Length: 257
Ligand code: NAD
Image (cartoon, rainbow, N blue to C red; front, side, top):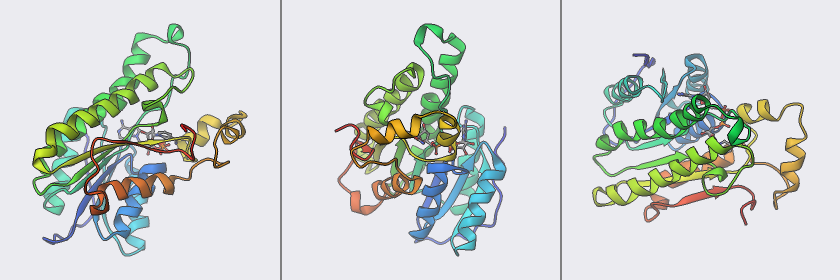
């Protein structure tokens, strides 16, 4: 068991509660901050506890409300405990952005071991499944889930067979849940960012011509900022998107067009 959310919670019956996995960096951090700006209380969960706590500090400095905790989305006990702790602290759950993911092992399929393949699929796909499994029963007042997939969830990123397979799975899982839980008033969507300048992405791109190449292939002529993906995630959760469920929304500057 490795979920140790920290922070002070003040419950209020009207305030919305959001949860973000992978909230310690990049798109997850930007989403947590954006959620808090809408007035929601936010649980920032990450395998890197210190990074999650940093995000919480950024939110509380702006006057928002947040708690942080450690979760490994690939570990069922950890997911169950972190989500239970969030609900114990805030009294419910309205939105979840399942954003944590693993981008690694970029190589041709026949050069990949089965263990590498399974690791990428386990964290990205099974991890998203585990989060949804414990979030869905808590969304008793309706609510919304956004699963962060990728352009690789609806098209192909070369030399990333496990990631592409896993992210296609995340899109499929999101659509399946959207249909099954629509009668309960719960909306489920997938967000499909194109290349986005997060710390995780910058690490992969460092020392390569990747950024220039990707910019050249993006109609808007640049890569996304984490805040641009976050704005779409928070919008998909909001009442402004009340009739949108089961979609895979690209935030990619026109790349897939
Ligand atoms: P990032 O590396 O900047 O941040 C990812 C965060 O997730 C980190 O804080 C990390 O500690 C956390 N994390 C990793 N494994 C975890 C686990 N098992 N349990 C809990 N937390 C874990 O990444 P990012 O670029 O912001 O990516 C966020 C999501 O967006 C991922 O699902 C990624 O696949 C997807 N995405 C990113 C891009 C991009 O170009 N940045 C494009 C498409 C999709």
